[in-house]
Length: 355
Length: 216
Image (cartoon, rainbow over all chains, first blue to last red; front, side):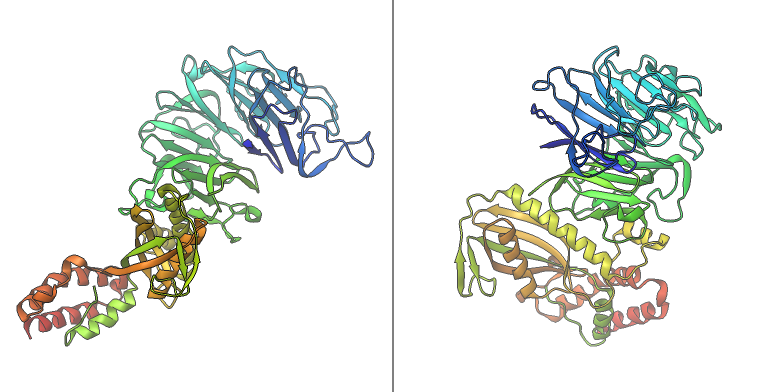
């Protein structure tokens, strides 16, 4: 039973909380070994650069029959795998230290067997998030760590250099209990237990323009939005989305934001009318339960298990049955109740419970 | 609720028809049987068990039906999805096929559930009675059982609801006149909303006609 899925830039990871030996499967691009070493059947010394069907990813676990994989996350060319008792495993490209280990000059990432393990955090890691070339870790104590590329300030560590060891973020989130983090491109968002939202990283597309005019922010800043207590947020390449406690969806940033072709950019969150998610006088109990972001797409899950998507429809990734971009939330017909969805650059994966 | 037009009201009927407003029905069903014409008076084709059916399962199936029909709704309404206009209409829930289209369900929900009986409320466009009975049959199939339709009752036709309807005992001139006056405003607003500012003339004409109908 698959419990977590993540879409990277041209590859996908699926994981289960099983205690069987095989807990993670991967498919897609493997040129940087973001899916680990996939032994070729023709030549056992070589590995596959493209994996065409979900294939097991062997993990160097100490207790493979006890440890469970909780969550997976994928970036441009690296992956993070979160376990319950053995920390975080990273693999793939490490040119910017995004795998949390020292950058080795001229390292060949293709056909590499190297999977790095990260254990040194203040408390247990409960969420891992991959940005394009950086990684974020959220711990049980509410702290956020980062490593990887920092040229847009996406590591939030106060500088624009790369970091190869997960380091704790400070700024406006110092001492704040963060309950959710999100990233996919070069911008990052974090939500606290009090419903506040913080952002750092790229702001070329007005993602953080509500607090600063600079296009890069390298320290977490509180975003003073007056839209209510925020429950969840998701970061895309150029646009962001936030879900409030009341179940309302707000979007800001640049691109196809979901309010028709006329809204292309906004620095201040704008609400998407709930009627677009199926709410009406006839169905007043419908609420959006989760929001997710791909690089230029958005997805929303309602409490009835329905999936709504909008954004750029690269290669049909929105699943609407049409090839055109979608300018406002549109229901995707899925033969079951959608439990979760993962968005990538040009593909999407959803986990569905059949009726 | 059948709607009747008197005298000049007949022309109004055509305009209302062009609005393509939805009608609402309460549909009664019975689990456990399948017949050839989907109703309970038809020839019995199959008998099945239905103990496994719960209200939750039924509602999930209804949600799917509503969703797929929602898509059909937008397909047939011939609106360019890339325009701001399409967005505005979608927000107001006004996207509807304004021409001929196969039957489309705009909303469906379960009113009563007492197995083997159940009652659904269905709002739809361009439907036929047979289509509604077929919906009941299909709901039965999706729940891995079977169902027949026991009752179809129209509770709303566009803007006219059960409350506007006159009882048999009220079929006299005075009540009819009152009913026409009461509905006047509703009809006018709906025509305005849907046919839009296209026809100022039409609306004025309509006012005159309604006044005529009420007086004559």
